[in-house]
Amino acid sequence: MDDYDENDQQMDCALDLMRRLPPQNVEENLATLLEVMPELTEDLLSAVDQPLKVRRDAKEGKEYLVCDYNRDGDSYRSPWSNEYDPPLPDGSAPSDRLRKLEMAANEAFATYKELYYEGGVSSVYLWDMDDSFAGVVLIKKVNDGTVRSKGSWDSIHVIEVVEKGRQARYKLTSTVMLYTVASAAKGDRLNEINLSGSLTRQDDRELPVEDAAAHIVNIGRMVEDMEFKMRNSLQEVYFSKTHDIVNGLRSASDLNEARNRARLQRDLFGQLKSRNE
Amino acid sequence: MLSSKEKISKAVQLLLSSPPGEVDDVFNDIRGIVNDDDALQEQIESVLAESNMQQFLVVDVPEKEGSKVLLTPYNQVDGNRYLDPNTRTVFGFDHLRRIASEPQEAAEEEEDVDNERPHEELRGLLQKELNSYVEGHYPEGAVSVFSHEGSVVSCIVSNRFSPNNYWNGSWRAVWSFNPETKQLNGSTKVRVHYFEDGNVQLDTQSDFAADVPEPLDPAGAARRVAKLIRGYEAEFQQGINDGYRQLADKTFKGLRRALPVTCSKVDWENIANYKLGGEIVKAEQ
Image 1 (cartoon, rainbow over the protein chains, first blue to last red):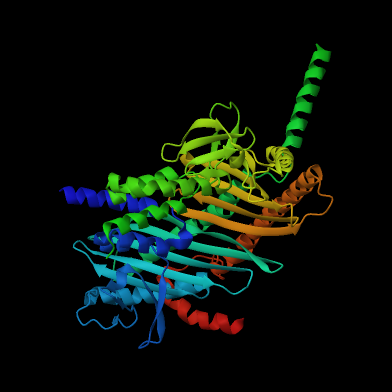
Image 2: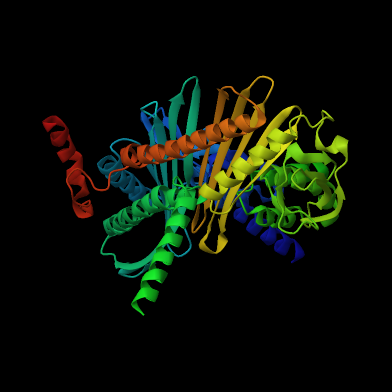
């Protein structure tokens, strides 16, 4: 019982720490935590979101995304071939029924990804649970075209599904990691503004399910609505809120002038008032 | 596998990456992770000192009502003693409890490594110039000017902490003027942390170098150095504004559209159609 409590406390502190340390260094920070608490490796790897990595499925000639959800040991499963790389004959995989749904979901979200991201990589992984199933929808888009700025967007949508006859309950936890860097050359120096991080939101819906395909429609709509909201939140937080904070640290205009003007106004008001009395 | 001591050392180093205003929170997290207060105590004090000096912690000078000074590597006399050149006081500082104590009048050798205080007049005048500058541009800012190894070093800090609203921010600048080479070198650093349902951070810094034009009598030098500092910091702030515009207008929009090119949300019932339609759309472009 004591061990459990200590691990709980360590995990809570580790997660709080990951909310405070620079997101620019999330991989190094996680590596440090793994070195300090190796006994919590599995828990940390599944709880801490990291930027998604891209791999190539040589057999199918397509790219896929890797994260803790398609990992077994040191191997990763491709959603296209359903095989592990490096090979793992007994690697965990979805049941046949679920694999069919997984294939259809990958096709559907590949189209979704193309419509919104016009490029990038997507992957959907499903796994069987006692009551029903769960899954994750991953999307990654990197934009490092111009010299002046680069960015990357990682979507991680974890969905838990509980089927109840002709209805199903969907619990969605979404994290979007957004990294943006702007550079400006000044003589022989390169100044950089690095604005990066992640936001997390949740949604919970109960929807009708007439057939297996309905899951894809339901999950698709939830993910699309969520990304719509999150894109707005990201815009608001990144480019409005943090910018306001910077301009609250230093005023471009002279505050003394503003204070003098305010004092002059007060004096004038005072004089006008006393004259009218 | 790391030894217990090595693990604690790694954990403790994380303190130096704390966002502004959150050293206590990060310290508590490290404490919870290490779970061994005695072992932690051995290693934490020196890192806390380094962290406080990095963040330019502003402290009230003991027994000098109204006087404040920044804790920096430039006014660290020895161990945990710091100099306030404006009141000529040296005091001790407990980095763990953040308490200043035992003020003493500064001895000659503590005020300037050169032991001559040749730049005291310049230092004092520059302090006055920058007091006025900081009051005019930094809502809750502070500045301390020190003599350090032959140069006059100005440290500016401006913090806004609002943890109840899930954000904190800090602006720090260091400007070093060498009266021999007549060179001014500076660097400014801004860090902002927003953490409601997430973790978003801005990190930007810039370096500057310039020759300060003659004449360089103390009053003239103070005026000219202050003027250059004003100019560079304004330019840096403008650069940040430009950077934000670039990121919002180009970078962000280039990652993900607000809506598909069809201007409507995805028709999930008929998503198969898009795969075929896509071929046609691309051909038409």
